[in-house]
Length: 179
Image (cartoon, helix red, strand yellow):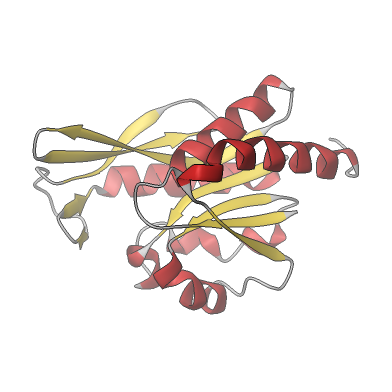
């Protein structure tokens, strides 16, 4: 089962990924990949990349960050955070579920997590986050086939969607030979 969550900023796509991953881990499944957390301090914003396989977190980008990494909008990305995300995604390829939160403008410019994303279609199950404005381009660039189900996220149905998708992934895992 392959799912792409899409929706506008701040609707809870990352929160939904984290909750699904946490629940599946509690149920004994192996979840790998990366989810991003936005931390707001006044006018400054920081993006943290969380490795779902190891539980570690690293600075991915920030509005106050000065560095030599790629820039997107108000954010400057760190090379260390990008490499850690790539490693988390690569290590998560053999997990029961690979989570990639999110495939964004950097990846559409062949930066960020892009170097490892060509392998997503080889995973058993995946949960991806892609904003609506990038969805068509991402489907083409990453060669994501018709087996990727696109599900819009809206705040009014987010909690029900969490339960629904968690149950669907558990059902899908049941059809796999567990390693």
